[in-house]
Every structure is written in structure tokens, then in C-alpha cells.
Image (tube, helix red, strand yellow):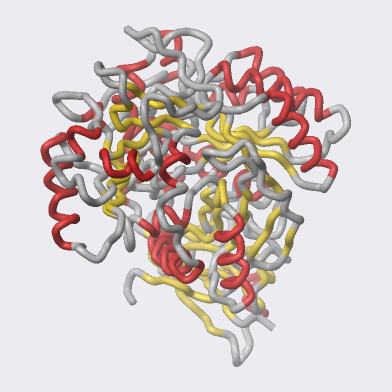
Length: 528
């Protein structure tokens, strides 16, 4: 018997690919979809106890699935850490940090995240000299928006015992000033030298962050997500929330194997599966970020002698990846630059011979070459990409990449042309606005926030972008229980005030999520 029946809707089901304008009703029985079809055909499923909802012409589609979002970090910027995304100058940054320092005397460390020096007139990153203006007595740890670079004040460097003689960890750099001493800027694995000195968050703290992020996810119509780099404490927090029915969305965890600042891996996790929580894939980092010039390139960044950072020891990475696959775990690897992508594909190709059906993902895939895409297609390698970067970080890409690199930057159409499984995602909090509709608009228009276009030929259709944020995102996570609206699937769906398939692309980000449903229950509503 149907417990919920919604009619008078435009339904995008992804059943038999796109079905738009054919179905107008959906019947839910508990937490499972009972039927999708025409009202006249399905109305017999309505019984005295059925909740009947008139959608009044709104659109119903599967809930969005962000296949790469750091959930606790998004929540952290809403709770325990200062959010400096959007500050427009170094002076404004220092003012924000100073106010935060003065208003929070109880904090033992001042932590913040989000600066992007490229949008500043001076375009120079803050160093210990700048941060010492805020405080020389309390340690300050300031993470760049990409999370691959951090700035520290003198006190933080002292606590971490970082000086001119400090051994630089493999896959990282400690930047030096003109005096030959560390200037407070750390790249990649070197971040762990300071980050590991900061008192860790408790599991209860992490749960507060997760719930804070979940509310924004609901508002954007996100009903499923992948957290790509969870340490053992975070995994425990997620599991406890799952066990107490407090999670409230479908979560795929990618446990991190090699923590920053250490060459010793975490113990390999066990696979885990429950209605709301899955662990079937692990996470590695091969390089850094494109917006901060730490992604590993074959050529130099424009007007520089920099080529980024390769973080992984290939031999160790291959051995650990094999151990994971032997245990039944897939492998997802952060690789943005063409040099990093090449190394990862070479390892995946070798592993694919023994584990052809095991999940092999590349996270980001920022600058792949044509031959690399061909190798991905041949060796069953999927990817989770972020066209949403083009909007907020496109200015960085234009400043740092030559014309050839720009033309292959986040090439989603080329990926689809090679029949590679591709999901779209946000990598929030790298971006502040992680609304999937924002990512869809960027995938279609290829526009930056300043109105410039990057690799216009790589624009994809609205249909393909929607699919990448729903069905493909479920598939890349090894899921077949959700991602489409059809009989027997879990009842995770959203109501939109307009149909994105027929909305002009310039208006698509104005579409409103009216309601979000998880497990057949309304968890968020615009009107409530």
C-alpha cells in the first residue's frame, strides 16, 4: 500500500535514461518507490491511509549526490573555524583574523580557511610576518581555499619545531624567505607538521559539524554524498551517527590511507554497508591543487618555473592500492595535473589486470591528455570532476595556465566522448557555494565568476550534467539502490519549482528546491 502519493508533477526519473514529461505521479511505500507513471494508471495505489500531495506542476527528480565533498570541513566553517572565503585583500584578512582573535580569547589556536590571493590586488599570500601582526603569543594556522597550502605565524612554526634545518617531508615543501628561514608558508604534506600539533576535534565536535553541513545539503537538495578523506576518528563519528539514526543522508566514506606529515599509513579499513553508510573505496592524494599551483604538471605554470608537487611514492602507492583491492576495497586518487594523472593511470592499468571490476576513481581529473582519457576508457577508470571550480577559481586557472592547458581544463565533454563514467561534485569547502545547480551551470557554460569562458568546447548538456550529479554519482560509488526514480529504488528525491531541462541555462541557478525527501520522508521544506 502506498504511504505517499505525489501527482501533478513533471518527473525526471532517469528510468530508461531521461523520462521528461511522460510521468506525472510517483507512489512511495515506506522508504521505497512503488511506482512512477501516469496518474490514471497509478491512482489505484491510493488507499485511505495514503498521504496524497499535489505537486502543483513542480518537478520531481532524484536527490542530488555530491560525489566529492568534505562534509565535516564544510560544517567546521559554520561552527569552530573562521571562514575567510571571499575576503578581498590581505588587509581585510588580517582584520578578520584580529577580530576573531580578540573575540575568542578561550581558543588555544586561531584556525581559519578560505583565502585566495589571486582575487586580491596585491596577489601575494600572507606569511608569518603578516600573521604575527595578529598575534605572536597564540599560534595561527590559516588554510588556503584549496587546502593544499597553509600560512602559519611564528608561534605555530615554533610549536611545530620548524626552522631552516627542518627536514621537508616527501611530497611537501616548506617555503623560505629571503633570509633563508621558513616564511610560514607550507605546501602539501608539509601541512601535517603544524596541523598535527593542533588539538584534534572530538567525535562530538565532528558530529556538530556534520549536522551543520547536512542542513545546507538539504537546502540544496543533496540527499547523498561522498566524504573523500576520512581519518579513523571521523569514521567512528559517522558510524556512531549511523547507528543512532542521526545521519539522515546516504553517505559513502573514502578513508584516507596516507595522512599528511607521515609516511606510515593508517590501518586498512574494512568494507562496510548499511542503508545509510557505505565504505567500499579508499583515498590517496597524488598531487596538489590547480588554483595554488601545486597540482603536478608536465610543463611549467605560466610565467614561472613551477610544476607543482607529486605527493606519492609510486612504489608504496602501488603496493598499498593492491592491498586495498585484495581486501575488496576500491581506490580513489586525487590527481589534477597531467603528470599526476599519468602516474595514477599507470598504476591503475597494472592493477586492472587482476582487479578489472574493482572501483578505480580519479578525483578531479583537472588536466588530462587525450591519450590519458583513452587509457581510462580502456581500463575501467571512472572520475569525479568539479566544473564548479570554473566559477569560483577560474580566475586562478586563467592566470596560471597557458592556452593549451586551459583548453584541456576540466574537459567534461571529452570525458563523456570517451565513454568514461563521470560524476560531478563540489569539493566544498574549496568552493563556498556548493549548490549542484551552480556546478551544472558551469558544466554547460564554462563561465567564470568574472564572465570569462574556459574551453567552451567542453560544455555539456543540462541533461548530461544532471545525470552526472545523480545517477552517475551513485554508480561511481558502487551504488544501485538510489540515483534514479524507479520501482524498488530508495525514495530519495527532491521537488523543484522549475524543470531544469527546459529552463534557460542563465536562469538555472535561480531554480528553488521546494522540498527534500530521504527514505520517503520530508527532511526539509522551503515553506517550513
